[in-house]
Image (cartoon, rainbow, N blue to C red; front, side, top):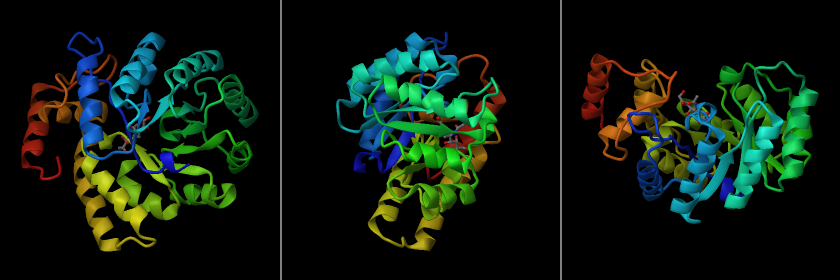
Length: 297
Ligand code: NAY
């Protein structure tokens, strides 16, 4: 499982002003990220606007990422949809592309029980023999998962871990305690990565790695190299990242990060897809000033 330990960028999907996907900028972003030392990509998740792309577009994005990365880093394809059938369709395509693992958000919108959620994952795993990573994001889905659910999932060797996008580090620690050391936990909220590492996370999948890849890759290095990483250094690094994240969440996540990458010259436009928030001229100026003054970005 060593290929899955590290920093995984929840990759943005660059777009042109008219909303069409900008594949050239996507390839640039992939190169830029690999050059900064990240260990892999999480493609087509929340940050990638996966839920507002068509399935065809999700496939095209994955194809571009796989082709550009060309085996240099680990690729996790997010194939989750609220329909099991459509998730399986995307998982089959991901398998054809040769990705290292698939991940799927918990089915949301229709209220189902833990049993149906477990059966949703089992159906995808039965259809495609790739490692599966559960995507837990209660803030977006409204779905909580029980400890019994995690324990049952961890007993299936095909289910290798969870992307845990929650600030609840007690729950994260309980997953670590109940599911054993082999069950991978990916920290999902970048602002608590250092705390997540102490609670047992093996690595992280995050959106802000798009704009600060080097900083998080360095944090991982520090955490992985030492059994007890030097606390003040780690705290200082997390605090640097959080200066940016605290600024970002006053505006929005996806448009903000695209705007930063646009300012960094990595992608050609900061367009996002409707209905996501777009910034006013005044907001753009505020973000630009922060960028110019920041030592982190
Ligand atoms: C995804 O699938 O793209 C993610 O969930 C990545 C995790 C991010 N969550 C969202 C909603 O963007 O990186 C986090 C998050 O942006 C960051 O911690 C700020 O809260």
